[in-house]
Image (cartoon, rainbow over all chains, first blue to last red; front, side, top):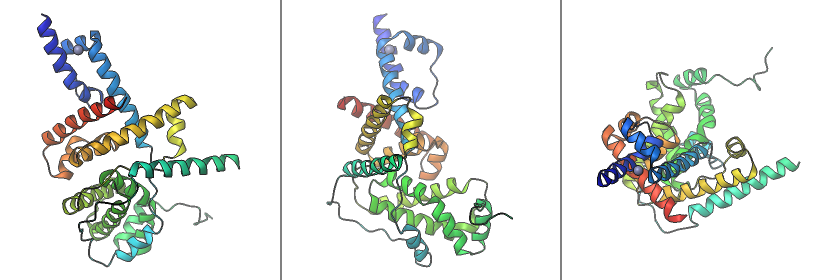
Length: 115
Length: 188
Ligand SMILES: [Zn+2]
């Protein structure tokens, strides 16, 4: 019985990501298991946290670089971009870029709020 | 009489005008959608410079295919599909790219999602961690996650746009979710 429970638990846990983040449904028996199982509950909590973060990410907008519209318009008569291999090395990590840009955005917002 | 300077021009009208070859109407469409397209491109390719190129490419493709736009989907949906294709062609041709910069979260994101400051901080922290975890995913997995979990596309739409089966899209997504969860757990 214990072995079967463990198997069921593994199977249910494997599917929980798509139940919480997607539109999959558990069977009644699996639902009953998940409701009573601490491991499954912990798993559900993790995916709900991820789900909340996704919802938060949906609100974010990365402003296009200045001059993009003119560049697009100037490019309308040219052939589509031919992609080439770019050097991989380079620059600040993107996460630092996020941090910098977010800090700047927050600072600007605060300035607006203070004004 | 209404002041045309403050009256926003209806998008359907802009599209119809642009379809006659009117560049200023198309320019207005680009202006309206540039940030959304750039944000999507950045989420897909992880590099601001490449994302700007993808955005430019997407709009150029849109201009060329504008006569085929029938208006059965929103222009935004249409241009987003073109953007995914542009990013996808680019990915095939360029090398690996770096992290996932999605900056400039508008203040509304924090205020609508949280009742208090502590919660807002938590959200911000969570978003940073999720972005970092997304960055660890292989591109094909990250693409389906971005399209499904951030943009709300269906498995069918993802499959059709990426030229894969619905099952493949689902499998990719499932693996990606498990990897995200592992990355997030490993961090905490
Ligand atoms: Zn369980």
